[in-house]
Amino acid sequence: MTQLVAPVANSPAGGDKRRPPHGSSRRRMFMIALGFLAPALVFLGALVLYPIVYTVVRSFFSAGGGEFVGWDNYVTMFTNDSTFTAIRNNVLWVLVAPAACTILGLIFAVLLEKIKWATAFKLIIFMPMAISMLAAGVIFRGMFQENPNLGVVNAALVTVNSAFGQDAAYPGAAGRDGLGLVQDRGVIASESTVESGSEQNFPLVGIRVDSVPAAAAQAEPAVNARAGQLVGTVWLDVVRGGGGTSGQIDDGKTGLPGILVDAVAADGTIAASATTDAAGRYVIDGLAEGAYRVALPAANFDEGYQGVSWLSSTFITGVIILSYIWIWAGFSMVMISSGLSAIDRSLQEAARMDGANEWNVFTRITAPLLSPVLIVVFVTLIINVLKIFDLVYVIPPGSAKPAANVIAVEMWTVSFGGGNNQGLGSALAILLLILVLPSMIINIRRFREERQQ
Image (cartoon, rainbow, N blue to C red; front, side, top):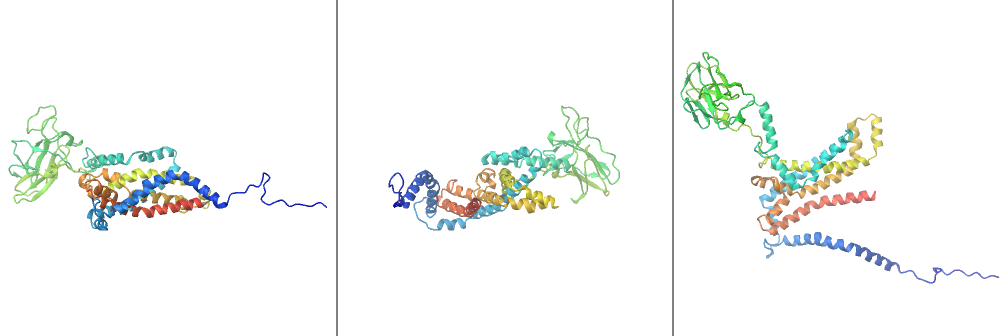
């Protein structure tokens, strides 16, 4: 009878080699992984962990770092008016800039899919991202200069006002000497009184050629005055190239339209007014018999409408936020366009076949499908605006810097920009870190959820 011999368990054909213990294998794999991760961990500790720990410790010391002051820096921080302004502005940034960028990015991403040259338009919208924040700040500071000769925004406003407005401005105007005109506090008036039914002319000099409107015509003598009227002509008493007689309406002398002319009664009240036409003529009606002084108010000779003081304390934060939106709307558009290209288009087509209009498709299909991308973009922009520094530092002029202050700029100012108080600066840095952390945690959780799906 043949005897069967059972094979020995765990005996490979090549000999009796034992497998290493399970714990030893895990330790070996851990050491290999640690070896690969070590350089990154060193850099992470040196560039992230150590600065955070050092900043926390430094925030409890004095400006020079030689004296432990406890919570004094934090107390100072929250009792300082500039810090409250910075926190208020940061709240305004968080409420406006991320939402505006995300909404504009969503609109661009959806609408640009429906036009022929979508790629070219997307390139144009994304192009500001290629410009550094410093350069963008310089561009916007130049665009919003108050002087319309320097700032393109105010230049456009002044041009529109000149085209549709009725006011005229002739800065630097003065009456021709020796012709019965006096000037006081900007008002040009007749030296003596004039009876109603008479004529009073105003030959003016000192007006820049570019201040004369394009609608101005050749100056013409006034019409004959009737009872109860005062008439006259206001003109530029200069002939280009020379010539002409002072105080006379000669060929080549231009009438000054849009000038307000007042008839001033003996008691100083304005009895009636009129405005000059294209040829510089005026007719003041409805006057009672008597003597009047004819005057050109000082408002005729100021600079006129010069636009809006965009870089003042009132508007400076809005200008800076607008520059940020100009830059980052392209980033939002690209991110949302990527999410849009990945959604299931069959759901949109099914909704259209069921009779849904484009607005319903967008609000009930497209936007909900894009919500994960929109949340990531929105939270990323919140983190970005909480740390905003470049634009706020570059765009405001010196007088408007306090009104535009944010936490990052305040931190730099008190630490290195003249304050030389690195204890208070460290406390502000910790405040900024605490404000940024919730948004970072939300983003990390979103990334983990997407990876698990």
